[in-house]
Amino acid sequence: MTAAADAHAWTRVGSLSDFKGGRQLACRVGDLELLLLRVGSDVMVLHNYCTHLGKPLTGGRVMAGQITCPFHGACFDVNTGAAVSGPAVFPLHRFAARLEGDEIVADLSRRPLNPAAAFGNT
Image (cartoon, rainbow, N blue to C red; front, side):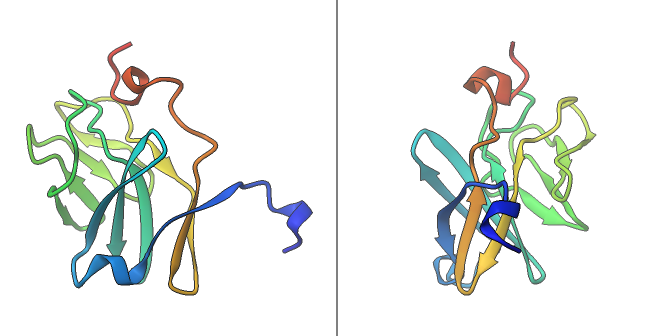
């Protein structure tokens, strides 16, 4: 793929070695709180806010392609961000991400308009 064909603005958000054996990694890049997930050989980059009440998803159970909010049990599909079960009804914001060797890069240019929009309180 040529640079002209790649419309994403890739930003380094972490590396595989940052996980230290775990499947989740919370980090901050600029004003964004992110949750990086390792699911098999895939890496997902999510906005680290449940769309129910804006609580962080860090520590939520990841199972069968879904993450469960540790506070109120809302469940999201990690591949699409779709809310699978309540109390959340709005999708989780998911960033395009890929591996470049050991480095995790994500396109952070497409993001919620404001923090309240990230968790449905607008």
